[in-house]
Length: 156
Image 1 (cartoon, helix red, strand yellow):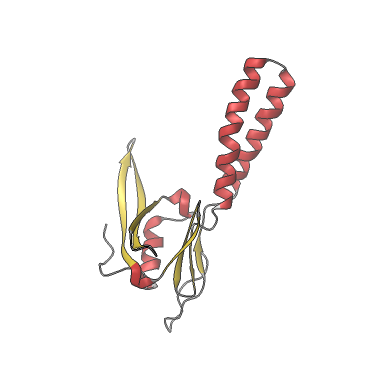
Image 2 (cartoon, one colour):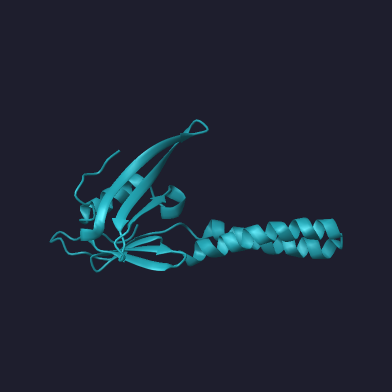
């Protein structure tokens, strides 16, 4: 996280985004797979490494393009999606909730962000630690501290 709220309640820029190392490694592995497939000359090897590259390169590029995932700028919450950036004022925030989910014996925390978009439809976004680059519980507490909690309190 960078930034936060000031003591007088004014908002500074704050943002949460994943790191750049893993997406860069994905893109590099995709390029290495293409080079390895072309250099072997084996048609099946070229097909398999091409499919691997087709998965790795776009996945890494999309992660780099959607940075930062959540940002608070001038009192608005900016949520970056594939279709662009959606700005949500605090009045349109319905709920911020953290969830704990057990998967394969490991507890994973999620942040659930519910808001009303500019067309009047309720939207639900769920963020993991990988999406935010920080603990979702800390991000939810920071957003609520900045006035984005909606009518309800932080739920766990």
